[in-house]
Structure formats: structure tokens, C-alpha cells
Image 1 (cartoon, rainbow, N blue to C red):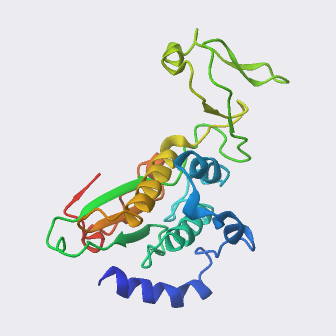
Image 2 (image 1 turned 90 degrees about the horizontal axis):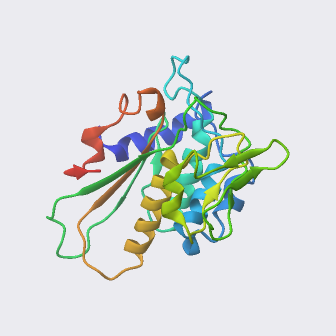
Length: 231
């Protein structure tokens, strides 16, 4: 059936589901304030705090119920910027769309997709992300207590970022920019599109679970998504 029909069914299912958990009380409402003014890096810093590590040992879809925490946050944020049909399905796939402007209804529908889970290869909980001062080309102290450094000797590509501010962790966890930076960029672009007067065709958005463990496309509703091309 259509995504709209599934959305109606899910609204009834969620009350009785043991996996589709509602947002933590007070969390998403508080975090959604000011969504209309957020820039991509601000979104990334917010999303990085949500624990979404996927579980390769699990046989469920999604592999970890915690992935719903970010999914629910994104649905609420999408609605707050004007994506009225945003919802998350029973397998933790988030869908939403931006209707075509007048006169562009017959143009091909473009899809934008990113994944919400982070890799189980490194700790993904209690992430302490921060923005550095403009990078001077030397070592960056991530964790003074544990003597963890980010050095251009080990990562020579850092030299390409001289003069820029970087987003880093305390060195004990991953950051989760793969692919929460993608999620942040897509929603920031969606926000700009929704506040722009430029003509455009239909834009379909989707955020998926479990990409890091090779299951991100397993339950993706390609037909229901409805994009002619997607990236």
C-alpha cells in the first residue's frame, strides 16, 4: 500500500508496539526548539548526542531499538520545518516529502537518503562533540587526561583544514558524522528549499537504520518512497 496508508496503520500500532518507542519525555520537544534557525553543523552536534549504534548480532529490524530515538527526533524536526507528512515506520525508516511548486508537478521526483545508525566498531554512546578554534596545523588535544591527540603526522589530510574550525570528540568515541552529517545536510537543504521561492519538483526524503551492518536497504520501501532518482 501507499506510505500514507502505512502511516495511518502505524499511528495505531505504536501504542501497542514493544519496539517502536515514543520519544523520551521532554527530550525531543526541547531539542526541536529553534529548528527553523539551525545550521547544518548545529544539527550534527545535536544528532551526535543520540546513541544509534547498530547491532550486527541482532536479528530484528531495526537491529537496535535505540535507533528509534533519532528517528522520532527527526520526524518531529521535519514537521517543525514544514514537512507535514513525515513519519517513521515499524522498521525505523523515516520518510517525508516536499511537494512540487506550482507548474513543476510533472518534473521527476528527486530523493535524498542518509542513514541514522553509527558503526559498532567504536563506542557510540556519551559522545562529547565540540567545535575547535581555527585549526593552526598542529596537534589537536582531544583528551588531555587520557593523552589522546589528533595529529597531522598520523592524519596528513588535516593540513587541508588549516584555518577552519573542526568538529571533534574527546577521543574515546566515534563522532557519528557518518552519516549524521548527511542527515544534517539534507534537512538543512530541505529547510532552505521550503523557505525559498525557487521552483522545484517533488523532493522525497528518507533516513534509514542499520546501514553500518549492511542491512540499511533490507526493509526500504522503494515503491512507496516514490523518487525517480535518489542519492
